[in-house]
Image (cartoon, rainbow, N blue to C red):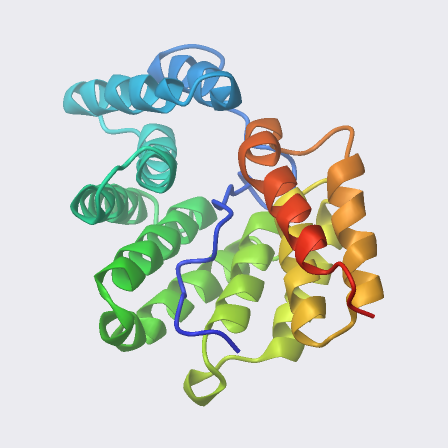
Length: 252
């Protein structure tokens, strides 16, 4: 099991809205719709993340809606992952995402995405601060993930987040490779095109030296014709699958 990286390796989380696994759907019009139109194709230009984030920061100064806060929490995490140049900038991005998600939880305590983004940003913030801080916050992060799953048990992103949590957490602190694999398989049963879960499933299989199975999953990521979140697939998941396949050369 790897060191404490409870903020989910890599691959930025992307939650589905509501109890299904369908890709997130913004309102038909307004600042959230405008921000989403920018963000959903950030693979074309990473600066689209900045513009979408700034648009929603201005919007919530006028009116705090749950949709705006949830998307803004996602944008801050993505900005910190992909745009921040220094650890201090990453920390500031994750901290703002955490705080925005907490506001969403306070406004809508039964919204699963609010809890999911709170867990994701808090995990990234904690691991960027250091292993001891991450270990100290494991219980809080686990609770937020479990709340998201209670509210949306078929959400592929929430299931994948739970799987990553149990994969990245050391065994002595509650990590469990069998549970991690099971959660990723449940995520893929909910949404077979959710490529983040497929990459994470491959990582579970590699950890167990089940290399042939891992290669099959990684090739499915590369061959995916309709990923649930195309920008994430282009920028994160496809390159991650290529790297892992390269690392598997010669292993049997």
